[in-house]
Length: 99
View 1 (cartoon, one colour):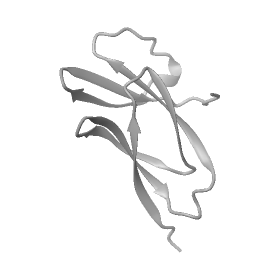
View 2 (cartoon, helix red, strand yellow):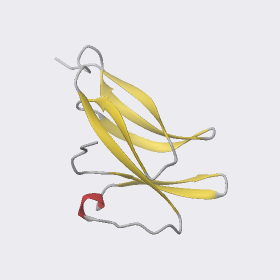
View 3 (cartoon, helix red, strand yellow):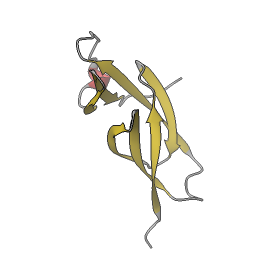
């Protein structure tokens, strides 16, 4: 039997780090710009299977800003996006989120 899925959009703030809650077994499809917002499109299990949640931590850095690319961030790059005069680089933290 195939389980039903739903694609949801999550608005991301342009900030160094932020956590969003998504249904367990979700998959990040894409990160992009919609109008003037930075958003993530996520493939999620349909209800009622979406009761359990996972926490995802996004790291967003502007071009020219320094940051530590530690082991947990390697391989987690998702996109570079231009919004107005700025380019933002989006990473999805792959380590445990304890916040």
